[in-house]
Structures are given as structure tokens and as C-alpha cells.
Amino acid sequence: MAKIRTGEITTHVQRLPAAKAPADGGETPVVVFVHGLLTDSLASYYFTLGPAFAAAGIDVIMYDLRGHGRSDRPATGYRLESFVGDLVGVLDALGETRRVHVVGNSFGGTIATAFAAWHPDRVATVTMIESEPPVAEWTRHMADGLSDAKTQLAREEVIGWISANHGAHTARLSRGASRILATTTLAEEVPAGRVIDDGLDALDGCPVLAIFGDESGLSAQVPELEAKLMSCRTVVLTEQGHSVLVERTEETQDLILRWVREHTLAEAVR
Amino acid sequence: MTTEIDATVAAAVESDITAMLRTMLAEDGLDDAEISRETTFHDDLELESIDLVTLAGSLREHYGDQVNLALFIADLELDEIIALTVGELVDYVAASLHTAGQV
Image 1 (tube, rainbow over the protein chains, first blue to last red):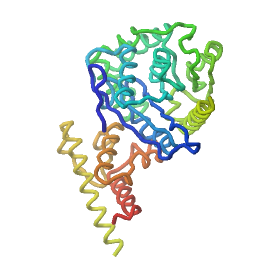
Image 2 (image 1 turned 120 degrees about the vertical axis):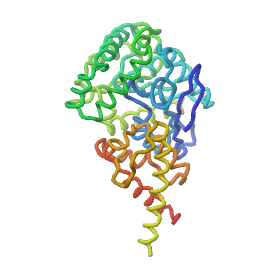
Image 3 (image 1 turned 120 degrees about the horizontal axis):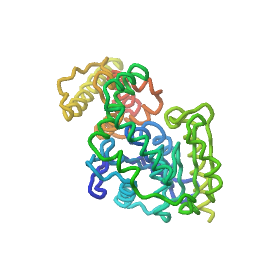
Image 4 (image 1 turned 60 degrees about the vertical axis):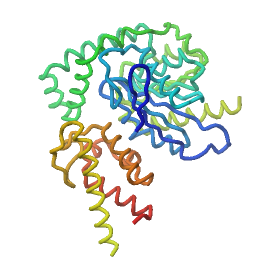
């Protein structure tokens, strides 16, 4: 386990080195996985995509977002730019000079997109799994969702309902989420940070893969993303809600592995 | 003979893993938890998936690269991970050591 100083906090990082060298003698690709808000940690990748990517010959970096997992949980400092700052801090501390393929789930995809917009020279590609780019509309969704979660999850009867309808496991995760919301300014700060322009011009030149479930409202962004982004591939999985990474792990893995391979080859030819 | 050696190895592994878990639980002030082969990580010890990442690191440090908890768990379904017992982990570690020819 590695603890890395990023800004004013300590960030928990796990790496899985590529199990083999590239067949063409080129540079080993590197993927950074970014997890989602509140109930999530790097474990979501450590026990799913991480080992498969390393086995496929990719260097894997996973880390816990501030406030989550084994990273520090400061009382304040939860604007999007702080989350992106931690990602930059992790890559700097690891001495990573390669362009990285950033893969983010839910809020992690928003961080990945912001990172690509603000540090275009460090990014090879972005993959968003059930995410929105950090535009003004996203801040409104987050403000409503987080404020609602903060109020609701603090109520014992709500946790009881979750336990009865979704099981003890989900209830325990919900209690954990409630603790983050109650002891930090995350709910107020996440929607209050820096955004990117609605036209997504900041992502020009960055290849973006966006994966959605058709039953989640987020897949409605597909036409807009395809119209606005210069280099974009969208995939909508049928009969699937927001939990794409957990419930459709293998398909997600295959899509991203193929995506990374294609762009590694393109990079080698260039 | 092989069975006897396996039983000895499994007992040693169980004792190692129990000690690792006690250290982790002590950090949460839960050092009096009962740990046996039937104990589940999730319901009995109330460990979260991030705790299993820490355990994976301890196992690798102790036994070397042939014990790869990430790979073991990546093959399980979510409900199997939630129901995972100390005994199942002990058996996996003992089998990995056996395959690697260390015993």
C-alpha cells in the first residue's frame, strides 16, 4: 500500500504493473482508474478491471479519492479542482510522464473529463462510465442529488427502508455515505467548483469513450456528446441502469481494453 | 503424507490470516471479534471491500506474488464476495502456495 502526499492530504494509491511487454516493442500503455462518490473506493477496480488490464499488458494505477477509502478525509476541500489536483499529484509523485488513459466511473468520469480539459498534454484518452462532463448543468444535478442524499441518509428510517428493500450490504454503504456527507462540506463544494464550457471545446482533440446504461437518465446525453466532441465513441448497454461497472463488468472491460489498444496502436503509428 | 502437509500448511495459513485480521480490526477498535473458518468478512467482521485491498497487500507482503487476492476475488460474483469466509480464503492461499511449489 502506498500513501502519497497530494496537496494538503495523503492519498492511497495501488498499482498493478503490466504482466507483459508490448508485442511490438512500443511503450507500455498506462490506465488510471477513478472511482465514484460516497459509496465507492479503489476496491471497485482492484477486484474487477484492474487485474485484467494488468494481465493484458497495461500498467494500472488506482487511487482513493479524497474523503474515500484509505485516503484522508479533510473537513473541507471538495471542489472539482481539488479532486483533479490529487490526480495530477498522484501522477507526479509516481513520476508518470506517459500520456495516460483515464477511466472514470460516475463522478470519477467527471474528474477524468476535467483532467483532460485542464491538462490536455497528459491525457491519451478519456473513458466515462455513466458520467457527465463538468458543465453547468452537471453542477445543478449534483447540487440537487447531494443535498437530497445528505438529508435523507441522515434519517434512521430511510436507512431502515434501504436495509429492508436493498439488503444490509447497501444499508451499510449508505451509512458510510451519510458519514462523509455529515462530516465534510463535500455536498456543498462538489457542485460549486470550476466547470468547463457547455460547447465542450476544452476536450477538442481528446478521444472520449462514453458508456451508459439505457435505463439511466444519463444516456440522454449521447446525441449531444456526439455532436460536440470531435473524437467520441458512445456505447449504450440495454436493460441497464446506473451500475454499469458492477453489473456489466465483462462488457465494460472488453470495451475499454479494445479502446485502449486501438489508441495505443494509433499513437505508435503517429 | 501430502494431506498431512496440506493440513499443516492450512493451519499455519489460518493462523497468519487471523493475525492479519486482528491487526486490521484493532485499528477499528474491534480486536475482540471471534474469528474461525466459518467467519464471514462482510457480515461477521463488518469489513468493507477497501479492507480486503489492505488484506491483499498484507498477504502479498507475507507470501509473495503467488498469492494474488485481487485475481481470486475478480473471479467471484458479488454475492460470493459478500459471503466469503475466512476458511475459503485460507484454502485459496494454501492452494496457491502448494501450486507455487513452496510446500
